[in-house]
Length: 114
Length: 116
Image 1 (cartoon, rainbow over the protein chains, first blue to last red):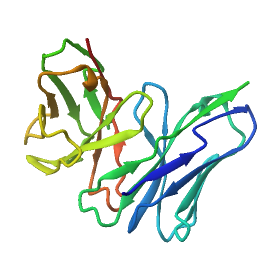
Image 2: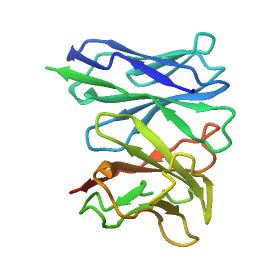
Image 3: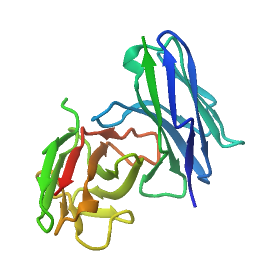
């Protein structure tokens, strides 16, 4: 069964600190991996999208890495801000899917405290 | 360019009633996806539609749920004879092309359905 597992489930950090969120997936063959940010009560917003040939992609203070061999991805947040408090979701698209169906992880809930 | 629009944002229905959720994709987008998010759970794919066609409904319950994306107007997710277990946030997303490639899926703000 194709799965996307994220860790930790939740995380609390102080403002200004860095953090790294993890994502392991078993989806195969793999097409692309995305990281989304979902604020409470809102829809997910895309942060990065990477194909299997990409190892890293940055979007401001967010940097995503991908190791297609070990089927692992990480999202690194630098110099966290209070507005970074949200759920971060790892999403994978299977290459075998001809419908664009995305498989979502459970998300990591990040709380940034002053 | 307005984003993906969903309405209503909040919907309360009694058990046995019908719920209709609407989604207007971004301008120029002809691919629409519906997802359900139960409390404390991740989003789950329900159905993928292109204009006037259901492409993949493998995530949608066989009974009581239906979806359409007519030539004109918004996409509609209909839930008949709602039960308490249908209470969830329903998100719509749209894309310009098939999300299998690098086409981005843009999400709406969601409709929160509460069944009393």
